[in-house]
Length: 472
Image (cartoon, rainbow, N blue to C red; front, side, top):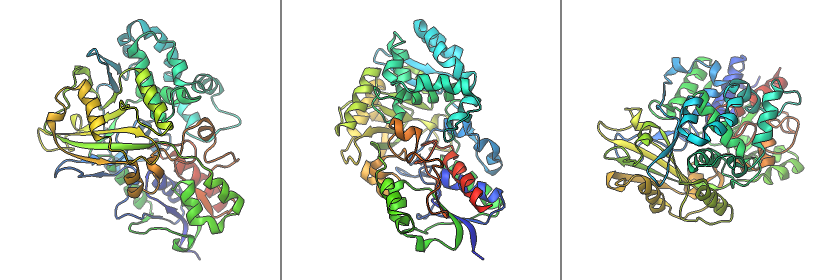
């Protein structure tokens, strides 16, 4: 007998999700984690000063709430509490105003003035059918979709570039609000398919908001791990896997790693032609991130920004597009789009009384080591004069340092691979089952498979379903 039915390599949200699916099916499962603590990109640590809790990578989790799989799990029973902010997103502009995305589509449209009608017409078909939309897109492509009308409408809009969709708006506010959501794609905003990210993230804001986890993103991991252990699953930390020899006897092995790592670890157990395809997988831009311990809240010029846990800092859509295009050409243009999270405004566990945390990152060329600290802080200061005066301490990490911290973040790519149109439609490449490999024992379970990046666990869920078909 084998010691385990299945081994899962990697303890990020997808790895733990895969393990839970297997354990719920009655399989004996073990999760192996190379580091001393579990979590992948969802860890929380004291990076600056004692008492200041900073999310190391992921921070805001709309996809955690819309995830069809997470909705089936008793995560609240294992300590997970979501913290909402009144507004899902705030996007400040140079005139002192801010574009706001609220849970209510109608209120958001009203704020957009002359563009309200156009915004509502774009979003309403998806916001009113959000459950059906997420059921279709948080999975591999189906030949026969359950909700063909919703999916077709989404496909017709989403396959376009963000800049082309934004042309329906006349104001900087509406264009910037959509452009900021689309920029989460890491794509140039004139790239085909970039509009899909703007639609998905805006719809998620209208469906569930953009929450953070009380106590930090690690609370999501702790809840998943607690539930897995309650099902009899085992987790082993400080257990790196460098080759298949490091895997305990088990009938199936699910890897929460990217294709390049799978080739390195399991290349000897896979056909050379398949390994070659794994190595051709394309990675995207990196990130540069700064965490701040603050003496007070960020002093935004637009007061609405203090009512959102997420602030998109980047000015107009034209400015955002210029920077996102530049990084694909291997350079920074000096005015990056900065994603800012201010969780401590809505979660008092993040900082000592009267103090606050700040979290911000921008996209940079793949593997960049350029220090973006001053540039990021200048962008925030532009919309929040006096921000620098509130900084007590900071912790910065570049793309190369991110890869050293988490081997899944190749060149600082936190999305599990480039989100070009082909790799969005078919990750890691075109095949009937994107999770299985020619070796019937080996599966890929990371964000390098459908539906891609985000803390939703769906990549692990579908990989485990693939494994179960062979284990049964």
